[in-house]
Image 1 (cartoon, one colour):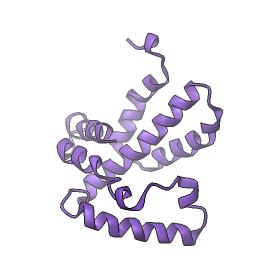
Image 2 (cartoon, one colour; image 1 turned 90 degrees about the vertical axis):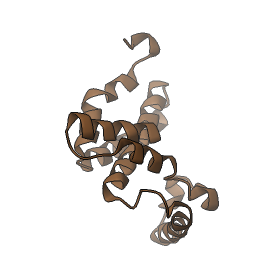
Image 3 (tube, helix red, strand yellow; image 1 turned 60 degrees about the vertical axis):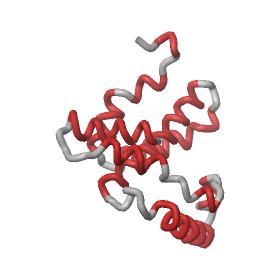
Image 4 (cartoon, one colour; image 1 turned 180 degrees about the horizontal axis):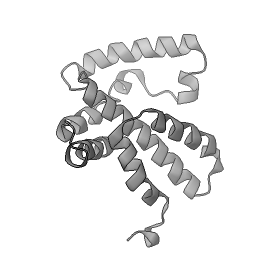
Amino acid sequence: VAVLAHGLALIQRDILHEPADPDRCASAALFHDASEILTGDLPTPIKYYNPDIKHAYKQIESVSCEKLLGLLHESDPGVARIVKAADKLSAYIKCVEELKAGNREFEAAARQTREALTEMHLPCLDYFMAHFLDAFQLTLDELD
């Protein structure tokens, strides 16, 4: 996620000529799931099984984030948006890799995640998807 966040911020700054701090985005991304040190990671289907579980888990995550991330940069909305996009992009790339390996269990997740990425309307993410995403579907032999 940190590498993707850094890359998205570079695209935003150097290609789209919009303000972004790649180092700040990368450092925030390194710690964006740090709350899971305290909470543990729950699989997404469990986290969102029903509204009560989702709300309770979000409260636990929030308290953990405040304790662990208080001094980091995710409070900057621009940084947070790039880190969120990188996290979602990382999940999508995982789906692509699983599908490439023949694991059809990831078809629905790939579709839903791709839609969520598109709905983010983040120009640096759109640029990444248009110019780099197809490479993740290639084998090592197919890469130039």
